[in-house]
Image (cartoon, rainbow over all chains, first blue to last red; front, side, top):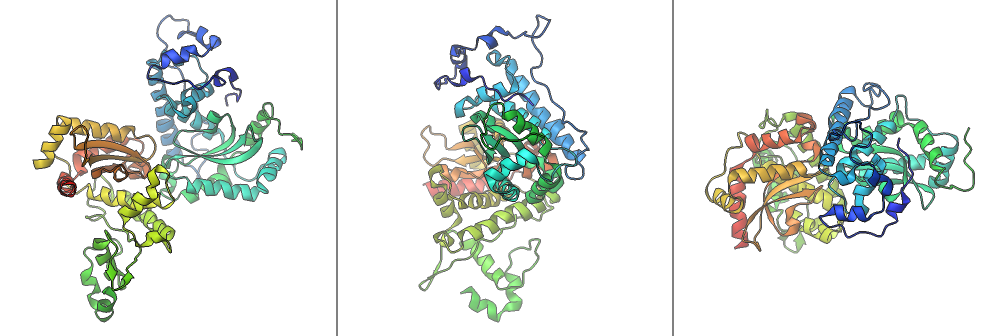
Length: 266
Length: 262
């Protein structure tokens, strides 16, 4: 997954009065490194760049999560929805050369625009969200985290069971489309369960997600119809990858000092 | 009122059911009150000194669940109405039990719990009940075609043409990101002289909270079309406009809206 580092300089700028003419305001952000990369950065041709972001495959075959997430559902969810967001984003970027050259993380944060999102945000964030979601699952997932991550969960939630209850409750009470996250809050230096609507994700607030659950209906309808509870339980018991969550929190320790006790890494 | 009559005429209770839903003829006296309550839910009734409070009931669509085939499958209707819509009804009843909302009409609950945008918990369920009742009535077997009469006149006046209206409806329905609804609504106090407008809204919100009177809606929550169309929302919208929409129903609602506004 992409790095969690921030371009602190661009986010430290005071909130700009975004008008319809975004180009003026973006140029006033001092982003020399990005501005030097013209639209043909990385391309040997002088012609127009044809695609900006690619559709990343899940780190397993589309049938690998059976029977908890069927191949048919994965083909639609990844092959149509996720693919659709990538194509949609690339189409939008064809017409907007101010947003060239960003990594996907950077693009999500810039287009979030401090809560007044640009048109590209929904597509960019949904591409990021789905990349992150596939990686949050694995065949033979579920169970419990171990060692440091388990310790941190117990510290911040009291017990793993309590965390699990909170996560499930969040997933069941999220109204409409959205995502549920286990997140490391950067400023508070603790883990929390967070719900977001539509395409929003915790990186726009500078926090570090460890796992996510897609609660848009398209994520479960083909397999579970309206039974979101069954889907959420299947995710917690058979799909969630605590291995990936552990890798993510280890990486996060480079940016967030979780203080005492030191999290041992075996 | 209802109880006295029902207890002595138990075999007649079936005769009072206006239509058979998938539950067939219910045998309890509750069903007698159900039929009457459906029509009288718009204002709390007083009998003597007591206010009649009754739980909200799940209203069936005005056609059997397979009547919209092949454009909207029975499978979809059985989940959409039988599980989702029913769930909203059950959940609202739980939420308002023992509260002052219990004696209010659905519209009153919606406006009150919308709370100027700072939604109170019963809003989502109440509004979704209203929205779904309205959605089933926006469709009919053998729907589609064109509107006529007063409705067509207003459409042509406010949108230019029927085709332009359809374009706006399609666009609103297709671009409502996440869950929500697209509406054709009547504005009783238009500042620009246009009484009809297309509105899109997220999640459970509906134009009642904006002071408009809805006359048509299309549900674009994914559960409305996923079983039949998967991610192909534009195809679902097209089929809705070409084969399902009940322009007669829309015209009737417009007439009611105009008379209410006058």
